[in-house]
Image 1 (cartoon, rainbow, N blue to C red):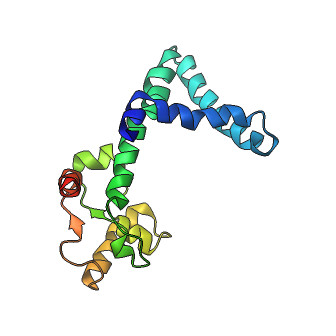
Image 2: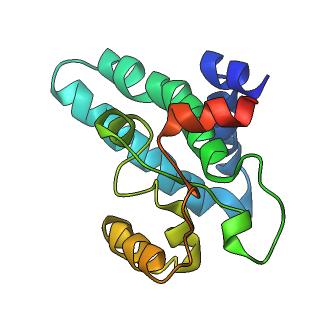
Length: 158
């Protein structure tokens, strides 16, 4: 159900709506103005390039649909099917990323999500180093890292 809402843009609309409502609420006005100013900037760039509709088709529409779907799938891959625990190994998945998934689900080593939760202060592009250290120290055990997103989703569906 949530994926359908993401695919058709309902989730994107629900995320965008508060920005406009925030313009009329004292405590949220500044944040809303910053967000909408950024959107106006992107629209202006497309308009100056002579393609104002590109804002709709190559910025707003993908953000409200494609991005929502893949962000939800990524979040599911990071924490789906897990239990509540203070042991991060029981609450977070690690997923090896191939070239395609790095560009579709986000880059910068986000597949090393356990390492991110062990120390969220590590820059994303260095998570692979922390992951390697966690494996060497025996914190990440064999079989804890999924082979890829498709492998993870097949395992979760069982």
